[in-house]
Image 1 (tube, one colour):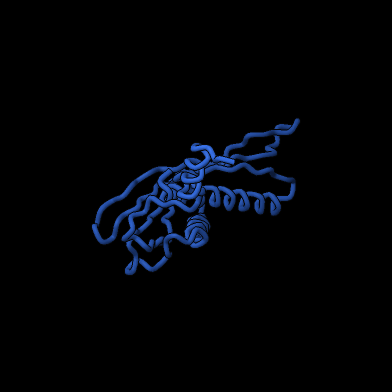
Image 2 (cartoon, one colour):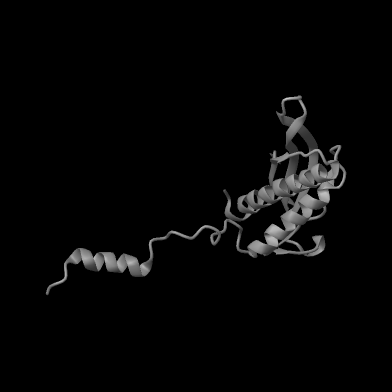
Amino acid sequence: MKKKPWFLIFSFFFILGCGYKLLGHGSSVPPDVHSISIPTFTNTSQEPGIERTFTQVVREEFINDGRLAVVENQKADWNLKGEIKEYYLKPVSFDSRDNVTAYWIEMTLFIELTDVKKKKTIFKQQFHPHWDYRVTSAVSLSNIKRMEGIGNAARDFGKTLTSLIIEGF
């Protein structure tokens, strides 16, 4: 049986690959950049302590990604600074007695990524992470739900930021 030329062409391209890359494996990071420092974000909002949550989550996302080592400022190729500028709770759902049953957490963060060696800003961008959470009649449980909402917003933000920096999306 004689093989058709299209079969050979298809086989050739199949062996060489088609140039597609799996999500999470490509990188727009220059080849000479291997590390990033992520100092604790500053917090000028009215909500104390959320800078620690956001900083920790962003560091974890970069560590889990593994394409840039998270190191101290003095050893880094890039430096990622963050500032939490605003934090709001907006009621979005009410019961029949006009009691709030759900809140929308909204924040404004400013991010600046710089190349340490070249002393050059790579990008500056403002982000607006958000999350909603339900409240209960128990104040302590509602506060736990609020903190979980902040954590969830931080995780979404961390994933978005890591993807933006590493993959250039």
